[in-house]
Each structure stands twice: as structure tokens, then as C-alpha cells.
Image (cartoon, helix red, strand yellow):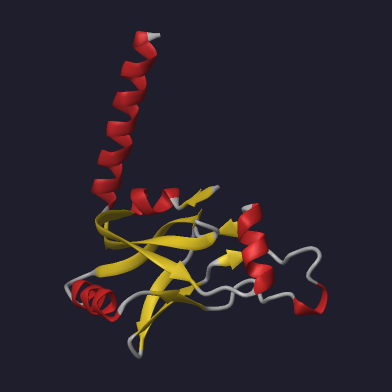
Length: 143
């Protein structure tokens, strides 16, 4: 089970990637295992040398009763100090941001791939669409 952020590759140039764990509650991890996650509009911030993912949607667990979680709460990402320092240096450069690229399970733990990204301009997005259309048309000719 892997949830991908397809819009991230369309809207940003991905310069670097790093894997991080997510601190989740009991009902959240059950929803993640089911695949009830959306990271399309989410982003990552560094506050007080801690990394948080903001606006990540995890659906409520249907059997969670009073212990259910808030769907859009800020969730802490688990990284080493060196990794946080490296990310902080990278995003301090001009117009770089941290975007979650995908969420997946690894050894029964929830992980997220964090991308250090630079925003694309409109003409860059048009170029991406053009390349995708060329690949699609050449593939159709083969079959």
C-alpha cells in the first residue's frame, strides 16, 4: 500500500528525497493501513528544530469511538538532528520547500518520503505535459 502525491511531480522539481517516520496515534495507524490517506495539499514545516507535516488528511477509523483522531492535525515527522539540519539548510536557499511525495508502510511502520522541491513555472509545466504526450503517442504507435 503506497499513497503517492502525483501533483508534486507536476508542480515541483524534486531536488532531493529523504525518508521519515510519522508519529501517529492508534486509530490513525489503522486508517493508514487501510489506505485512507490524502497528501495532495499537504506540506512540511520545521518549527523549533522539529519537523511537522501539515494538512495531511487521515480519515477517521470507523471503529474508533471516542478515541478517534482529528483528521487534519499536525503530525510530527521522526528524523535525526543531522537530517533536520540538512533539510533546514536546503530550504533556506531561494524558493525551496518541503513536500511529502508518498506515504507507505515499511516493517509495520508508517513512513513518508520528504522531497526538497523547487516550484515550477507555467512554461515548465507545459513542457512536462508536452513530454508526457510525446511518450504516450509513441507508445500508442507501437501497439
